[in-house]
Length: 121
Image (tube, rainbow, N blue to C red; front, side):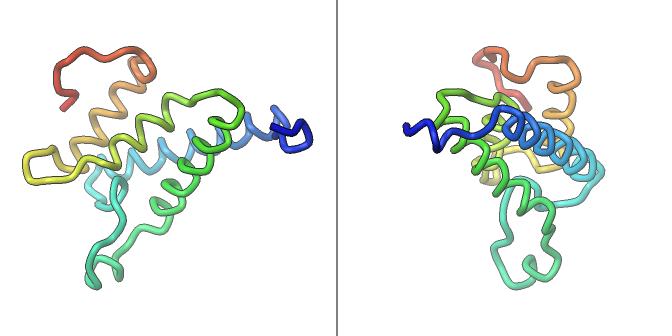
């Protein structure tokens, strides 16, 4: 990579901090019952009740992950959030449960630590 394309470390720290703060706020709201954090609206009905902050958070996570990858770095919080955004289906936990479990793992300092083969939910 051209050194002129490198991002200032202070800007990267600020971006990571903004992501973390927004993630925690959205996780708290989702854990209290708001839907749409881990997936984009699918139908017209959902688009009317969409959650713009959640959509921006997903976009920020993708951008942060891309920037960090260019620098050869990773952000465990960002990576895990994006992984949770891929969980869909009737046999998977609801968004509220995912948010509560993720918040609990963050509080215990387990995000970024290797996980066992057990289900997180």
